[in-house]
Image (cartoon, rainbow, N blue to C red; front, side, top):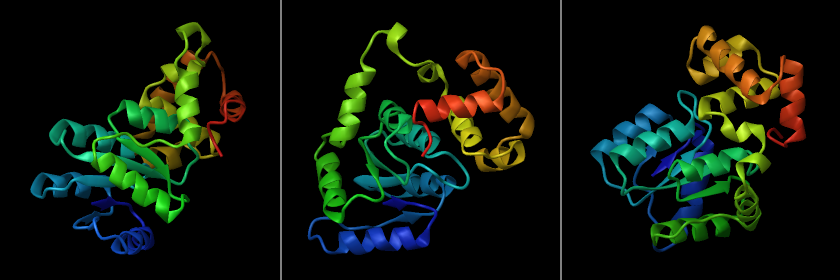
Length: 206
């Protein structure tokens, strides 16, 4: 099953997979709510799940699917580089994480690998995971953020305003402000400019 809000991306993925003899696309969804509804009704071996969906963050969708359908293997897809989102997705139960710009052969390999019960990560992500296995005192402050706080940080760092962030996260501006206040406290920062500098320094945004 493919979950992505862009029809052209879904069509491209289906085209790539149609050229294989062992992988068949039997379901599609364009948002998180639709994806959850479909997996409740139908059976799939693997789901390709975009991390940026219009209604819900892909990691939240992943957590719900893992709770309701723990046997369903989920391979996360993203346009973003393998930053902290990749590690968070794996911790949330994803079987792998792949950039959408990867070569078609890499996508097919990843699907076959996770379908066989293995994890799939690129060498670059493997290095990040190895570096993440350190003592708490060596870990950067942003690793302590919740998924919502981290998402808020990335959107602020991308230059988006409060209203825009609240719409993208499907939350009220007041709730977003609470997340902003929490992450400022956790990162020991005082304003948005410092947040942006922090995100750039730690390569959390492209």
